[in-house]
Image 1 (cartoon, rainbow, N blue to C red):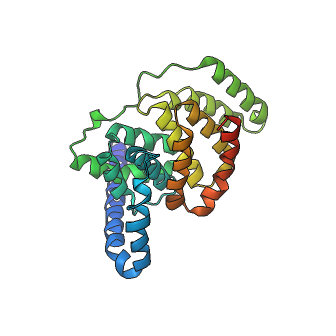
Image 2 (image 1 turned 60 degrees about the vertical axis):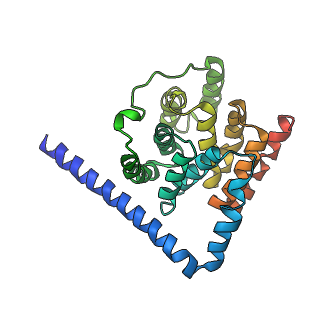
Image 3 (image 1 turned 135 degrees about the horizontal axis):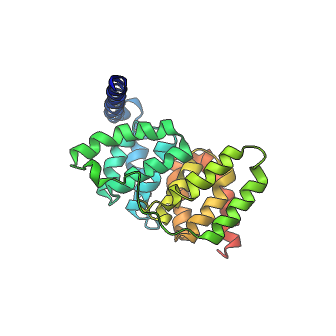
Length: 255
């Protein structure tokens, strides 16, 4: 029992240090930007915050979802406190942010999600968010589309079952029969988080599958297109241009 307490205390200290470090980096960046790179400061205030964030085809809330997902996926923690605060101001709930962090552990890695949780914690505390306000481990799952899941499971098993049966089994049991059915994020938002993370990290192979899923879940073509515009600024032009072959997804859907 004593060892568990020591481990918990050490983990809490690490999380607090990470959060404090992230806040310091954000403050340093805000102070340094005008003097270190006046042109970047100009583009930030004019092209990004003054133009892109004002474009009408994606709501401010959705832009925050996309941006937070991209920053977490890329472990770019300097701007994350600002964008978590902005996301809350734009209508993303603490529960949705919490669930997005959980989701991104699977699509961007545990370390990136843990770092994001450390940064979110003091923001939630300042805003009076309690642990009971956030999704727990045990929740009533959304209904499963059994036919679609059976098709996915069969396809993935045939392609990769002999390569890594553990991954295939976890994909079924943990991802698609649990994570994707958690109600803390609407299916459309969960898809939006996933597509944003894949684009942000240049993982193009799964983008068409998840973009199709996002549009099945209610994301419009205009919103999908504008998501790419937002991501160009937060994940870089090369990653977004690598994703632009999703035009084939639009074409096949009659867009």
